[in-house]
Every structure is written in C-alpha cells, then in structure tokens.
Length: 94
View: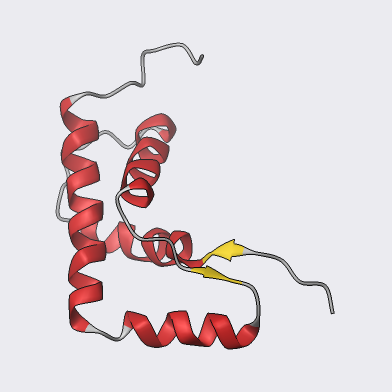
C-alpha cells in the first residue's frame, strides 16, 4: 500500500466553498480570485493532515462538530471578503 499525506482541510473547504459563495453573487469568479480565496481560507484554518484511512475517518468525524463547520464557513466568508476588497487578478505573478 502506497501512503501519502494530505491536508484534509483542503477537501473540506473546497467542498463547502460553492455553497457558501452562492450567497455572494457579486464577487469575482476568475481563477486567480478563486485560488486566492482558497489559499486565504486554508491559511486561516487549522490543518487536518491525514495519512491512513483511519486518520481520514477521524478527520471526517471532526467535521460533524457544529463549531468546526461554523469555523470553516467563517474562514471561507472572510477569504471572500478579503479577496473582494483587494483582488489581484490584474497583477503579474512573482
């Protein structure tokens, strides 16, 4: 069995992001702004690294906690507001 490491928080945020952002129809939907929102939300959320299926199960169980879901929604909303205030879609990359 080949093992890999993954931040399960990325899966959680990616899956929740469309439902949270549907309530914000005026935000930019370009790829750069979408990726900036994802990066900002992840940088402001605790990582949930998993290696084994058992670890992934533990991370999924943690999602069921109400405060955890509120924190994820808050991170996504904060990211959307921040990127909307200072979009970088017209900037050149480093």
